[in-house]
Length: 400
Image (cartoon, rainbow, N blue to C red; front, side):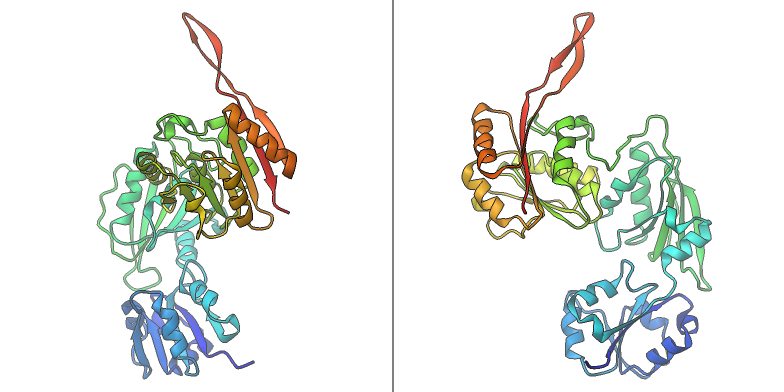
């Protein structure tokens, strides 16, 4: 095994002075240093060849591979493995060839400035990512530390909070932490008007008003939170469906017949980095699903136009599959063939024809077959009575 040739170094606002002696020696001995403008400014007076982040950023891996055999340092901010470039590099280059040198992260510095226990805080990043994805973490009394995209991000997040009844939430923006120019801006979401530096970290203590929208990450959001033409998986059935699909960190769901996207969106909200592909032939429903995904904090929902089973070919192998529309034996066979080991498949049916198909599939493949009936109390004249929703037959199984 050859010795590591690539060093990924976290650097803070205190620059070279803030590095441990051994790490500083590594940077000073480098032949090539790669980083952003800010990183290069924090490490002056070195003799190494300087390279900027390539564009597109994915070209960084090719650049690094071309430099193999030389003493290479990549400069990152704070901890290179915490929402930073180190993880991306480590997935593409043998970790045995890399040495990581972490610095105190922006999350740690912010928690220290706020006096918050980092173990009790949600740490998020919207840096270079859709800002809407933080919406799923707006909960009463939740504390958030967020790496932002730029100077405009805190105001965007303040708007999200205010729109959902969390306008009284205290917000603090910290910039240039650990350096001579460290600055702090305090306010509330509803009254946020500060102009802040582009490179900043945001701390939020979510405080709910009495009329705040409660959007737990546990599946079963209210139906009226979704734009829909009525053909959606309703709240109670959706909660049972997600329980059988078992959302897990980073797992991929195929939502076949996505409609308004309610199942796929709740899947993505329920587990960190969970992904979903919604297959929906109707453009109007895909548009509704996209709007719902933004509003509910799942902006990375991927929506595919097409008819099944043809639209399934070429998609990444899923960890779970929900068939809410387009059910046929052919669709099941293709979906089942693509499902990864230990994958979960759930199919819901409301028509007699679809129910008969589920019963036949259950007879051949096993699994669990249940009927779900929901009655809701509704006015009957001046009184109240039970009004039944359509009964749903649900088949679920795990691929062993």
